Amino acid sequence: MKLRRWIVAGAVAVATVAALNVAPATAGRPYDPAAQSLRALAQRHGLYIGTAVDMDALADPADPRYRELAGSEFSTVTAENAMKWESLEPTRGTYNWGPADQLVDFARQHGQRVRGHVLVWHNQLPAWLTDGVADGSIDKAELRRILRDHITAVVRHFKGRIWQWDVVNEAVSDPWDTPSTLHYKGFWAENLGPGYIADAFRWARAADPKALLFYNDYNIEAFGSGNPADDKTQFVYEMARDLRARGVPIDGVGSQGHLGTQYGNYDTLQVAAALRRFAGLGLATAFTEVDVRSQLTAGVQAGDSAEINPRLQASAANFSTLLRACLAERHCLSFTLWGFTDRHSWVPDWFENPPEGLATAYDENYRPKRSYQEMKADLIFSGPPFVLPRVPQQPRR
Image (cartoon, rainbow, N blue to C red; front, side):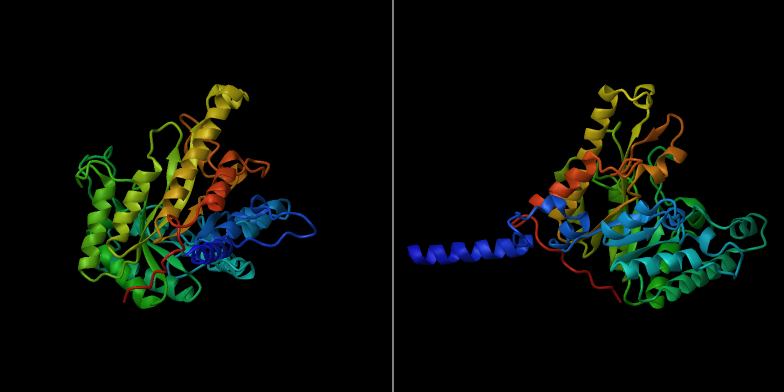
């Protein structure tokens, strides 16, 4: 009996070492997992760690560190803007594939997967489209054909090169909107009604049967009241459940993960519970646009450590909350940062009153912050039995 226990214990130890992907000591030096990239550490969980990519920064010869880190730290990339409609089709019928193709080529050269962002969104639409609807030269029937043709053209162009598509983005209102009752919002709902969502998924599936198709939104990290009238996560959950029941080929739900240290936010168990409920619908999940911004008070801008340090610590805690929840749910396939350095962050340009920033895992000089180190620690110290490899998602027909 004692021998059997030793055999079992030995087998468990071997399996644990294999799961940790521990390399042997080299020249007397012990293996140091902290020296590994986020990408390498996530690999043993089957998790993909990604970043949104600023194409101007990627191509800037004066800023080689950006390109180096984008290629080495991450296993997926997302186009921050290069695949949005106004960028791809600024003139009707004429596509500018160049920057988006460059990102896909960069990913191929670095052994990375690509998240396609985004096929249908009410923002960053070309003027020819919105003006045409506004002046009546594009009617509803033609608008629907334009949407179908755009989705088909874009997905076919990248067919076989995109792992996950954000098919529909931010289609649901917020409780602070008017009316306050949650509803489908924006250009597409106003002009085509909510049926455009199912259409978009069907058209995307027809164009590429092998890409995973996601609905993507913010403020859906955890459930609230459970009332779809004021709980956005519940609204999205019921929307996804309805799409699944009607045979719409939706494969996953992406939670953006734009957080701020000035808010209460959620704990890891709440976020993991939300991911688990979406997985119960047969859906994959992903965190798709993670950053954690802070208010840049006068003290922060003056370099007061008493104001800066609590924000950096709160930021690290929020990054860690989302990553640990993702690790805990095996159907959470990827974790994407919306930019990785404060040098190239969208936050200061968007949040100006009051000013906000400090939102990413590296500072403006590419020094890793506490957020980066805590994510690395989560990846190092997570393992069986509560953190297991991902469950692959198959595209729905």
